[in-house]
Image (cartoon, rainbow, N blue to C red; front, side, top):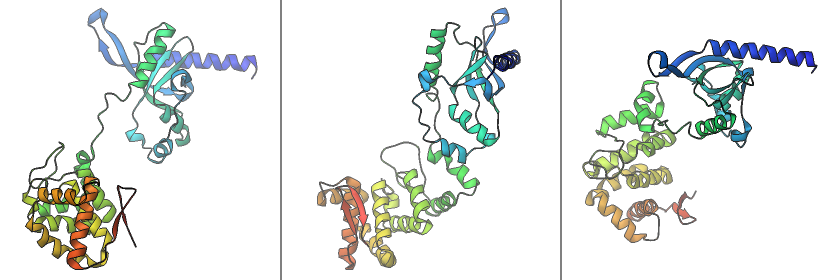
Length: 309
């Protein structure tokens, strides 16, 4: 690159930077009257004016970059966060490196940005300011929990959510966000239940709910606990040809006990197993011994449940 070309590019970047700064729209201000000043502002910034400081972002691996590419949606694109470097006529990216990397592949040469206007002028202090922002960029972000997405999933027609919602209404079951023991007719885990219907289908979940309902466990504390749901799921998976008989048998057999006693008996029979695994094995024993069918469920590496062919 010739000195003339380099000078022209420097001049163009300087003009571009100054034009962006002059037209930043204030977002957040502090103080009043003459003492009022903007601490954040918004602007559309060309990617050519942005850079990533490798001194504090050099170890990023971007494991989810392909997911960002595949799920790219301009309507959901949050602004990148920038800090002005007036001595260089460019902006440091403190939040949004991935978006900056993917944007050119999507035909975009500029992005909406929030500009941090109160960065220190001292270079060392500004570097610390940027590094602190970088490591704390997600500290105030509250992820949306799976159960909080349920109604939205139903609205957009998510098949698993629609099936789950139908069965929740059918059996009068609720779900709650808090952890701990569940009252009657309350799911132990929304995430586990959603996974069951998503992976194994509505018939599997209906099989589980129906057995719990027939056994009267729907009126018991922890009737829909994870240790119950997973045990019934594994039996449904392991014995596809015997599901009707298993449904009838467990509906009567489990009616003789409650979830607490079921849990205790499973622990007593398999004291060295993980609690949820012991419940799976205990249900398998009940079914196979009671109906005279071959056992299919075994445990691998002490904890993981496997099903033989």
